[in-house]
Image (cartoon, rainbow, N blue to C red; front, side):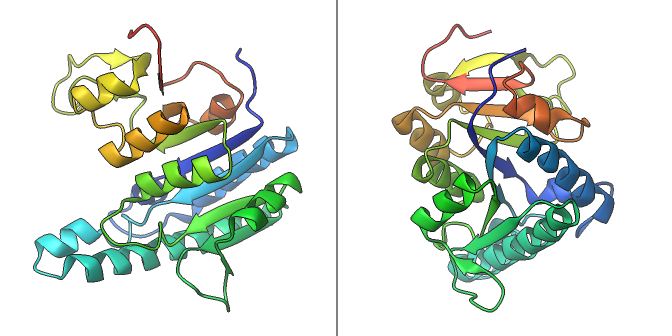
Length: 242
């Protein structure tokens, strides 16, 4: 059992919300996430969330299909806001006060992103969901997660994925791939390990924010991650790589 964190940035991929679907949002998955986050809030842990939009639209794929990259990225940002609102609904059904803040102004449905307001919400034990990415094309929601984690002074960035940690090769293609328990930022960047994009890793490195990568599909893992349990892979400034 580790030491619980006080303030956490949880990064959820859009794909994580699909469940077994090929596209879109699986209500039962979102509700399960909402219930787990509710348990975290009950422990007095402050939690902010950045959600991706890959289950609805991916800017890179749109650009690969001939669409202007900036336009494609903006469409992807709108997808993240749909996911953020869906997640907000699930959290409020679990009796968790929640605010959505967007980097793209949508005053009728969400607050604009204001750093001090976000921190105040967290201090009042409200969950804050950041939608719209960073508001800038050419930047991923991983980079947004690292940026927001630094801005709100989060103690850790927890990335919920579809695998149980970071491997030296794709475990779906290479059954003998090695899973790491601990890594350094430098090792991740040097060996181009697919934890997050290099900009996000560099941001976390510069601001000394540990990154915990864990399997979101295992019930209870969100709680375990924020309570400091040793699940998945943790990336930090200096440690023995194992």
